[in-house]
Structure formats: C-alpha cells, structure tokens
Image (cartoon, rainbow, N blue to C red; front, side, top):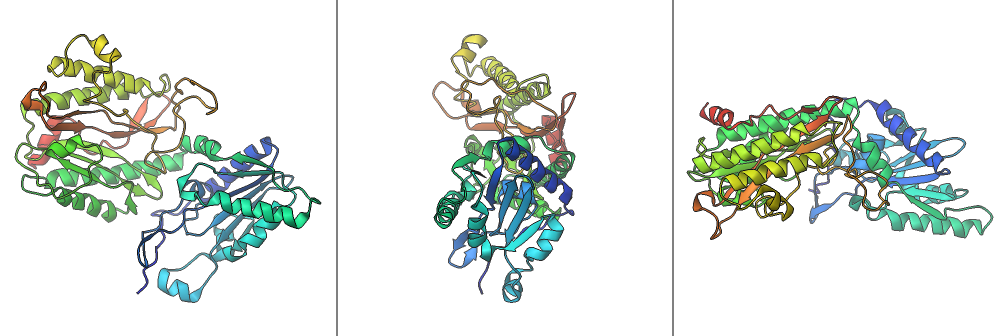
Length: 456
C-alpha cells in the first residue's frame, strides 16, 4: 500500500477574515513599494523512505496568509489598480482522494478561504507566466528553507514571459524579498493567535505534569517521551513543535539530547524540553526535576539559582525593556550564583566582562515563539540592512520564551558534587501593556512544588 502524507486538520474552525486581512496588509505594503506581483508556495511533501512520506506540515508564511494546509499549493497576489488574490491547489480527484483523503479543490477552496480566484495547480506554469506580463516588480520569499525551489521556478516563468512578449510588454526586472515584511507581520500575535498559543501551552503543561508523575529510577528516557506524546495527542494537538528532549543524568548537559535508551538512576536529574503544536502554533516548555522526587543539596542549590535567574528575566519582560534586558538580568543572577557556590572565582563584574560564566551557560535566555518554535522576527530594531542596530523594545503581542540554565560537566577545578548537573527552566510569555502573561505555568516551577507533585 502506498502511504502518502496526510494534511493536518485544525482543532477549531478557522476565522478566514484574519487571513484575508493579512493578505490585504501585505498587498498594501506591496503598493507602497510601487505594486507588482507576489508569488509564494507552501512546503513540499518529503519522502521518509521509499514510498512512505513524513506527515505533512505546511509552510508557516503560506499558512499565515491563506489558512490553507494542503501540499502543492501556490499563492499569487497582484497589487495594482485592482488587487487580486489567487490560490493554485490540487484539483479534485476521486481516485487519489480515496487513498489519501478529501481535497478542497479550487472551487471550494476559493469560497471557503476567501480568494477572488482559485485554479487547479496543473495550470500553474501557463497561468503564472501569463500573470508576469505587464508587471515590473516581483515579490517573493528569498530566505526560507522550506521553499528553496521557489526562486528557480519563478525565474523560469519570468524568462518565459519575456520570451513571449518580445519586449512589447513589461516583465519583472526588480525582485523584492518578502521575508522581512512577513516576519514583522508575524512577530505581533493577534488575539486569535494568542488564544491558540494559550491552549497549546496548557496541553504541553499537562504533558510535562504527566511525565513528572511517571518518572522514577529504572525507567528509560523514551518512556517519559511516550507520556508526553500521548498527552499532546489526547488533548487535540496535531504534532510536536520540535523533537522532544528528555535527558537524564549527564545527558542533561547536552542541550538538544533526544530521548533515548538511558535509564534514570537514583540521584539523577531529568531535563525535559518539549512542546506541542496546536493549529499551526508552537509551545515550548522546559522543566528539570529529580528522578526520585527529591532534589539533593547541590542540585537544589543550582536549581534555585536558575529559578531566580528566570524570575529576573520575567521581571524585564515588558514594554519598558528591550529584547536583551532579560538575558542580561539572568546572566547576572547566574554568574553571582556560580561565584557563591565556588564554581567561579573573583568579582562579579570581572566574571561578566570576561564571560567566565559561558562554560556553564552558553545559550541565550529566550527566543521568539509562534508558528515556528524559533519564530521569525528581528531581535534588533529593523530594518535589517542597518549595521549595529540597537536591541528592539518589547511590544504587546510579542510572544517569547524565557529559559535560563546551568550545565556543569566534570572537570578538575569543579567540585565533584556538582558534576553532571544540567538544569533549564523555560516558560512561554505573551508581552502585555503592563508586563507579561506566562502561559505555561500549569506545570510547577518551584522545587518544593515539583517534589510535592511527584509524591502524589
């Protein structure tokens, strides 16, 4: 039996007006640049092996503008005296739908998703070449890995259009990148997006709680991963937002350790970094807890430092601070804690200036979160062409993670009681007018609350 990728279906009905408004916003920006034609495509299907495909996942930019999540689809926008919004998608095919599921087809897609026009994708080459005629500017995404085949395809259409017109009509000679403008649009989440992300955060938190309660010495990392995956799907999430990180003992000092065969031992800490994807939006939670339900003295000492660092970063997550303020605040707390525990020597200011903390804390304190787990959007003031731009100020509607950590590997100058302790605490935050809303706190954070949960 041939196994083809199946589309994801959303948990709740889509508000199509949101996608239409986004297309209109993009068309308005195109007009401000002189008008022209824009072409975007969704991600292709990918073979896993032989005739078996990975479960299909749409391109984020494409879904953001269309709400359409079938493969092999294209979007053409024309900004001029009269705007046009055209979807190209797979046509109805009774035999293929018998095997792989019902397709929208152009007629139903145009009506349901609010397009002025929809065409069978089999007509794409001829229609796209025709649509290039009379246009001088071409807009497309030039820096998205999921659509790497887009540029040569569009170039072929431009070349064919130029050959057909023989200079009698204009064809695109100026190419403009949509990547940055789409990133800026996606950076501020509307009320509907925020609500979806709250729901994703709650589902992910339930997965973490279940994994904590299931943990005990003698179990494998992959057994906790199974608890996460079960909970995500049980509560309606369509997929993981990224491969689950479940790391016991020394594996917690490997930042992206995939759940494996490691057996949790008495005295191990377990670090889980996992989140679901719901209706196209990611969540991202990390918790660290003792396999036996009780933190040791050294584990608790470092855990409390990381928790204090996270709180310092949370306190900076509001519109009066720039993006990097939370990182700076967390690093100061972490570094002072390392000095207090004898893992670093000297003064705080020297340790900060020399980056002496970096062997123990080598990553940033957060990232944007949205349709992608590491979502689009500049961390510095746009435009991107400006050199040495200042950090951008946080704004209501931005969503980010807050995730400080400490990782202590064995070394001669490190007290053995701290060896192989890896700790990270991560929550998702929506920036508000007054501060931030933590949307992943349905799973405990404080050490004593984690211990109490694991006793039950």
